[in-house]
Length: 150
Image (cartoon, rainbow, N blue to C red; front, top):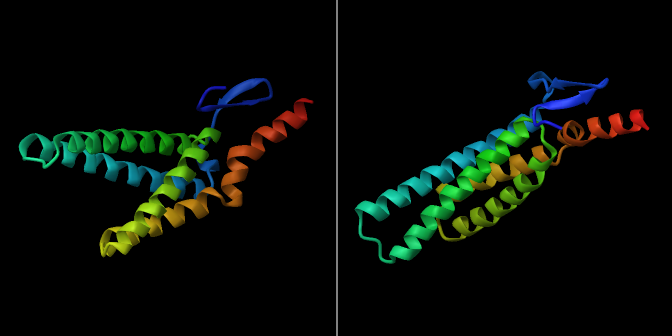
């Protein structure tokens, strides 16, 4: 089925944004914010690699490319969540678990100003992603339709 459509009564209708639970919107917003930050970090590292003198050029390019690709991926996942696509939840959960690991390492290395907000955002996103309303919005609607069609 199309990304913005659900089958109802034999016809396709767009999914309404008003029916999105707040938990799904929160998790998509956190994922999007993290994606924008990752893109900004990748652009910054890329710029510094071009105009500066990195100690290791290959590593600097690698970090910049990974940050850019990761940011784009997170934005794609956030878009999928806002569109209530089932596939968006799994990569979002993996992203938040990775963010918790990264936040823990930042806090341990005396970078609390970065680690604590990242940890809070990851925990908020995980709770929102794994909550009942999000699960119902992503999965229950289709299982009810399958039961009706059987």
